Image 1 (tube, rainbow, N blue to C red):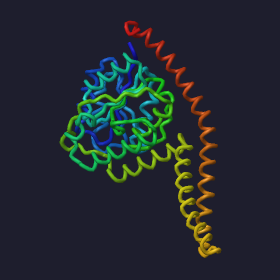
Image 2 (image 1 turned 180 degrees about the horizontal axis):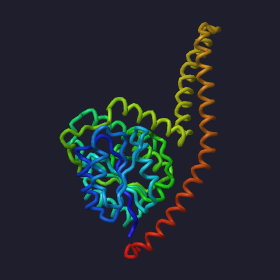
Image 3 (image 1 turned 30 degrees about the vertical axis):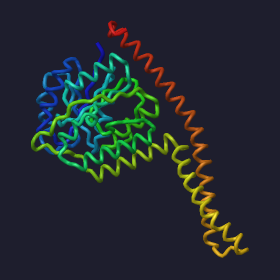
Length: 324
């Protein structure tokens, strides 16, 4: 039987944590639940401790604030074949997680994401319209930056293979976590599936910790910075192309004026056109150099990932022989 670890980051979820634990413990009787309390000011930690008393499940404390930090601590606690990351607010049904986990084990994919958007589950339960709009905008942006089409980049339900988790070095502190997982998956060409799921309304007195504008800005900044690191030629190439277009348009004006008047009356325009041209060329060259260096690193990372996947598949073949 495959070893499954369920990581549940929790912050002020005293109204939902018990139901979340009970739901996932019932659908995953052989899994280990790891609740990571992230400085909750309510009874979240006490309720989880009561539920875990006399069991093999774990309650951890993460004093550094942020969902990313809490999940990183949870993922680093146990070695498993499959890791499930899910929010503690009981909005993600455990029967959907069970279905997605079985799919990952059967098809041996790298990550299965619970898609709340495609079939309208999120819109039916979401009471903050700006959340929905922000989710759609961020999904489009991150799909573009990672060159991979996604439907729900902010989903809090992720079922991940051991090899995929092994290559993670979570850098995000807060709600940028889901974005980081999508970007890394695209970078290593991981096999990612997005599967429609149900999505429950939050329990009474349970509030979303995501701030639409503040966290949205952080997610965008994080995605752009990661795109620069992972795809430098694309980013610097776009900047360079834009600068060169401006230089050509501005330079054409300067040249046409010179041909008409025999002199250059607009010195500032000449300097501006030349500056944009130099910046454009420098940006393209920089992107090319970083792209070559990054390409070698990416190939090495993917090769190591593929090796880990082969070992993981062989282990699952032994544990689940009927899936051969």
